Length: 114
Length: 115
Figure 1 (tube, helix red, strand yellow):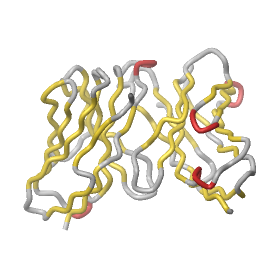
Figure 2 (figure 1 turned 60 degrees about the vertical axis):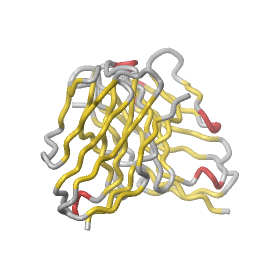
Figure 3 (figure 1 turned 180 degrees about the horizontal axis):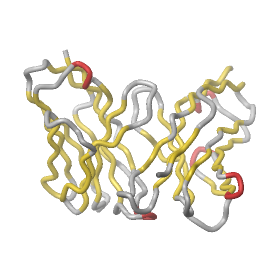
Figure 4 (figure 1 turned 30 degrees about the vertical axis):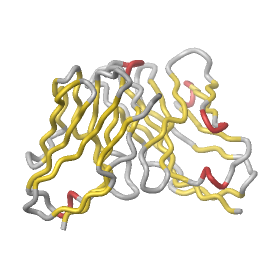
């Protein structure tokens, strides 16, 4: 079965600093990968997705992610963090077959210091 | 437009009450989902509807009863809930359930408190 690991439960960065959130997946075939963001008390907003092709994908709000098959990773990056980026970030994978369920990582809580 | 609308935003109910959560999308999506999310946890899948038919029930207790009246609407009927059912209930929709069709867009959720 597919799984997603987000090793960092909490991350704190200063406003204006760069950000990288880690995501590792376990899945036999090429996965469909997603990053979602959730502000407190809100729903999940899709930041970006990877299905195939160019391994560097651009998303909304200045985020990007790079798919590295050799490392089974799909890390999220942003060159300069804004205070409004403080939120919970979830990496997720859809595994074809097995009901095509969206499997989430445990999330990373991002705090931005002013 | 990638909007999924959920009502109400907040709901407080007693353990003997009957209430319903509503979800609506107008993106022409044919798959709709209910998730339950506890604080500081990822969403947990409850139900999946595909083409208005229930395709996945993740062994959810019968006190939760989903309904898909048409391709744009999804309801979750609640009856005799327990305090541990208090959570954020999220609705999502996607074009379909297979692979690249399964890009899920989420609503803002209903915050449910069971007293």
